[in-house]
Amino acid sequence: MSNKLLRRVLAAGGVLSLLAVGLPQVAMAAAPERSATVVLTDSGFDKHEYTIGYSGGTAVDNGELTFLNKGNVVHAVRSVPGTLDQGVAFGRRVDALGNDRPCWQPLPCGKYGALDTGGIDPGGSVTLGFRPYNAPVDYTITSATDCLYGNSTGFDCTPVTVHVVSIPARSAISGTLWGSVLRTAGNTDCLADKLPIVPDIGAAYCFSAVRDTGELKGSPRAALGDTTVEITDLGFNPTLVYVKAGSTVTWVNHGSRVHSVQKKGPQAPPDGYHNLTSPGLAPGETYTYSFPAGSSVNYQSNVQSDLVLPANAGNAGGFAPPTAGRGKYGGEPAMIGRVAVVG
Image (cartoon, rainbow, N blue to C red; front, side, top):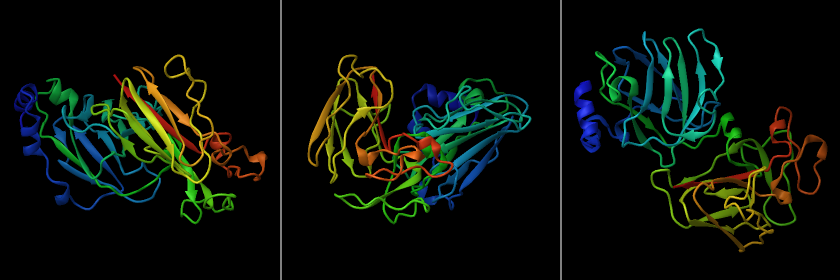
């Protein structure tokens, strides 16, 4: 598809026509790769189809793609407008000399959002991790600098399809996100050097070295109305929820032990007046909060069984100290959720 035709399709709102031409079905995709490299030159992408997805490993969640610019000008990759773009985390940026650049310049590490690499300098690369909320899914990508902004004279603008296969996986980057480090005792994620916790009430549990980022519901383009979040003995479900401004979120304790809901860190009250702080919720009890515009918040559970204390805190009373190399969890809650308010 030529640059001119792609621009005409997008300008006319003909995304469905574009998808019909450029989107092979997931069922037809090749076997998934743990990670893959997409090479860009000044004439286009090296391939028009990729399949990623795996179980385990240390890459980013459900798979990762490294976009390597072997051209002579800056290229930037993003989703074709009107197609899926959420559930993508920025992993790393490497300059032309092979040096890592801080991931917060200009994109934050480990924060899920739209598929957008930003400008990639000649010889440089950007790695993105994929954890879509409704896998298996297809992403349809293009070079924004060449195909959407009309700067290219010879770039092949045929859309590229990225198939992301739904394979449960956890990764090191999960530790920077919301989610839970609690697991049922005996889970393969349990830290080998720490004994399981056997509480007076409920099943035994352990701590993992990484967070399970859990489920996501809604999206910035399809925010939900009034929503219920389930609290279990192992975390919040969904972990991340997008809601419309003015919606209420109700947390209901479906666990066997007492849990709570409190804003995380020194954030102002989400609505400017009322703290997001529930009492301890016994099994079956609920807590409700209304979220106006601009009131997105990270929250946590602060009861005894849901905290990870520093290493010198011992292992009594349902607490577990972090293992070596896991100090980032010292004093951190084991269960973290997020309400993202749209509008």
